[in-house]
Length: 420
Image (cartoon, rainbow, N blue to C red; front, side, top):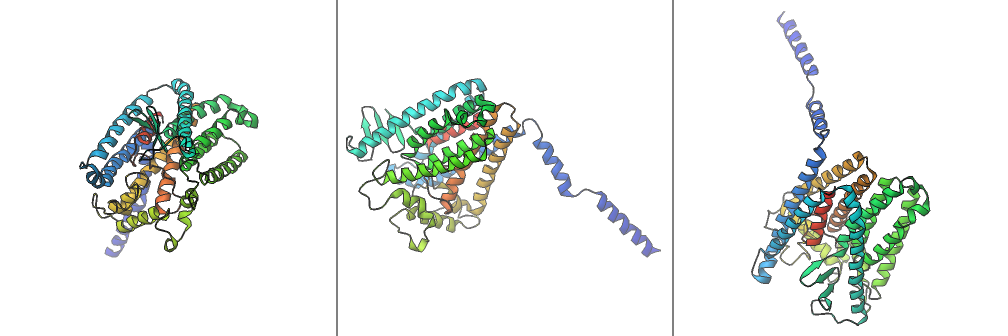
């Protein structure tokens, strides 16, 4: 009897276990319910981008404090300027998220026009410097009156701006407006080509003259726009061919002294930077483009799983070039380890999920196109940057959104999040 009672009790326990839902079955409906709430995308976007900004400010201070103290005796000089740009970015975020779609559609052509004009002035001054018409200063900048240019930066008085960053935002708004106005007519090649492709081609030339990396991000942005518009696949193939041809021409132009190239150089620096990740480390020339890649990998190796500790990294002390800028991800790896890198990747994944979710749920064509292109832009730039640091993609000199030091990139990215 006792044995039978025990068996009955065991069977009752089994039935209770079967009747009780598993933990995964309890969690999935709860997560689905949270995501189904009206403002879930908004809160995810705010949380993800806010945490990325906080990590960025922390890592910029960690990566730049030693160098800043050695240079000018103030460890807070770099983070102070980055904090100011973060505040300006918050203002841009607040303004852009409150502007109606009609205003954004109107502003798009003016932002893009201003970016093209500034890029034209920047490239013209750099070209005149290459031809010897304008003489460069000791820091490499060339000046005409109050206007000075230094590779990717244009300065008017004491105010500096990177026009290529402004071009990304202008292309998002103007491109989304143009495609939304076309509507079903996009099925015809002529309607798709005019006026989008001539403007895109001009922008590629003006941006790529000095910055192939930003040209690749613009190409990804255009692909995101056309993908959200439902354009046929053969158009993407044509864009890919044109993009590769454009990159080839820009690389060839660098060997003739165009952009930041030099006609007297023994090798084409753009080819070196784009192919350095394919070269085995034991065959790398430490005086060439491999140096930055080797030092970045050394920082990743030193970090291991959990890092050496925040602020305790040593390779930022002049070993890793551009440690606070385009190679800041290697400092994250050294000081926070694989765990810190995984957190950054997770936050960008949340940004990608949220952005495409907003695009999918938008009924208005302009909103859908703008959301998809902004998300493609930020995620593609992050992937290109991190891929270059770890050595699986070419080094292009792109900043890591929200994390790398840089005023124009941070303000424009936060404005884009406000629009999103």
